[in-house]
Image 1 (cartoon, protein in one colour):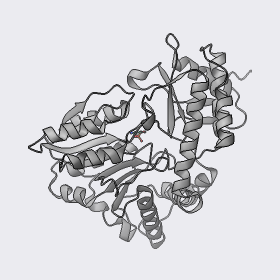
Image 2 (image 1 turned 45 degrees about the horizontal axis):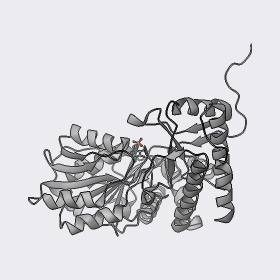
Image 3 (image 1 turned 60 degrees about the vertical axis):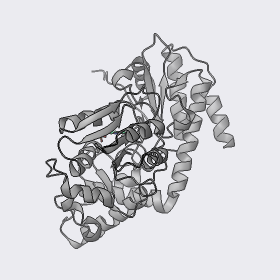
Length: 393
Ligand SMILES: *Cc1c(COP(=O)(O)O)cnc(C)c1O
């Protein structure tokens, strides 16, 4: 009988903006036997990964880890710091900001959701205006997404911090870095962020399954009086992990083996600054390819281009998902779909995590060949423009 399933040779190209490609050595590290999570060997592992994650968050504060997706880490940030009826300020930068807002609503938090056009990041001036107007300090937290994975727009977190300071407002500052941590520069302490939310499957080059909070002293103090119901997500039981290496319940032991290996690659071998520079370079090369094709990047502010993914608009009358399907069928490459109101209008190229020049070239070739195959109007010069840039930069 003839096999009708598509035949794949060589490696699949997983160029969605998360989950990202997991390095073979991280997979191998995860293949070791699971150990006693209450034993001495585990304690060393626990301490080591917490210490490494502090360096990645650029914090001397507290880091907690959950066996969860990023969504769990969102919930942990909210339920540990807020009480029913508390007001928070959130910004509609895209699909993920919208989902976090929906979660906050379900938890009984009152939200002011500042509308946005999905083509810009959070406007620091607007943050200052909203907080200055809140003379009674009803707003308990400002929650933003650093890198909007649905749009490829990166908010200038340092400038938002400065805006909160100018307004002299005491609100907690919470930032989702799920698709930026360990690929785009992020400074938990310097930017005085109170809770940073992260996940394992994007810049950290791991499979899905670990959620993180980096927590400031101010957030810890808030958790003492916060009244939202919490149990699984309670920071309290997690606070000792950095010193004991132990977790209150069974952690994702093998994912932590993988994390230890990924941290070695990021911190000891490549170095975070080089990791950020590599992502900047690949982001720029990708944008040059898009310009070369005569297509438009969704992000409209040059200061806010994401260096971990690029969202590309397809011309009116063409379906971005048809293009993605064509590329998957013909070239075995997965690209990100348009989420929420961007469905069918954009496709997203992930260029983060375990990645190099030739993987980017292969990715861009797949897009250029796919545009031709799917009959999407474009100019042929995208790959050439990216190659020229990579050659000189
Ligand atoms: C991926 C992502 C999430 C969701 O994380 P899950 O692990 O799927 O729960 C949230 N926010 C941003 C910015 C993301 O990129």
